[in-house]
Length: 355
Length: 123
Image 1 (cartoon, rainbow over the protein chains, first blue to last red):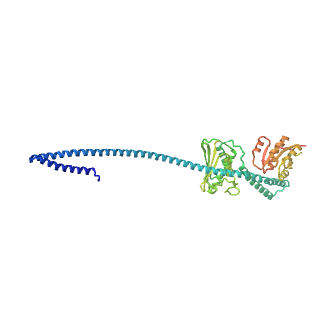
Image 2: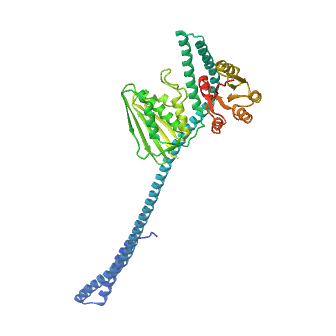
Image 3: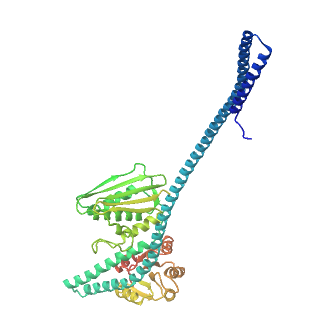
């Protein structure tokens, strides 16, 4: 039997009961009442009675039905509220998770930056070490070469001294003799300067516990090279007021600043300026010598501290100046850096540790 | 007048020859090719005024030779010659007054002549 929905059932039942009531109650009334007027009255009351009963039944049905509906609606609303709360809570959780993720992301980024920094530092340290190693082996080599050159040079100098004595004794005074002995002497001096430079390059034996006043040393060097500074070069000093003295070797530091200042002045063709700046930082002092001369090509910048590397005219430089400078700064546990642009100038930075 | 005596020790004969040739007018030059020969000369010769020794020599280096020699004749003035730059050993010898001065090769004979304090003696 097919299942009917409630609305069909109740309508059918109403029709059935209503029809049966009308048929049977009318029949019954006709059998017991003969008076037509009275019958009409009773039928009217019967009609009213039917309406009342059905209205009561309708009321009861509707009440029950609506009550169910209302409960369901309320339950649904509760559900809806619950769901909304649940969604809100979940959203909050998600927000928190998102925030945490963002925080973690930031941390990772920071770590990444640190790693990148460490990598650059490592790379710098590596090139520094390579350079130090190169200089150390060059030092051993050059010390050996210097010694081997010095002996034959000694023969030449001894022979020359003997010859000069001989000419003096024999009273041989001749322009040619003076020219020849003079050229031998110049040759010996030149070789001697190179060998002496090589020796300085390989030396690491002197005391490094003298008190060095860098400002004093720079001023001394400026005095020493005063005559080599062309008229068109202006020197400006920006000295830190509270620069402390550092431990080191006064003589060698003179050599460092002489080399750098002479290079700066040679880099300036006619007119230009050299700026010397000193800074006092936490663990070290910094000295910057900046010129606006011809500059150094990028390819040459790495080679400037290599022994015998020079771009100067023959006889003007041995190519040992900056190699020696590098070694001295290294022995002072400092740092030497070059920055240069062709036709703009060169900046030399020196860092010397305070202790 | 008697010329003051100087002993020069070097393992390079050419250096010995040149030294002698250039300074023999003013001094009586004694030479030795090694520290051992040098010590023999020190023992057997009186009135040596100054000793100049090369630093790097086989068997016995300059400082070793001078130390041994100074034990025999402490009153002689000692000098070191070296083709190398000044070393810790030489610095120590200078500080302890074992040697008077350090000359770097190539040596300037005039400078050595000036430095050596050996007056000529009358008979």
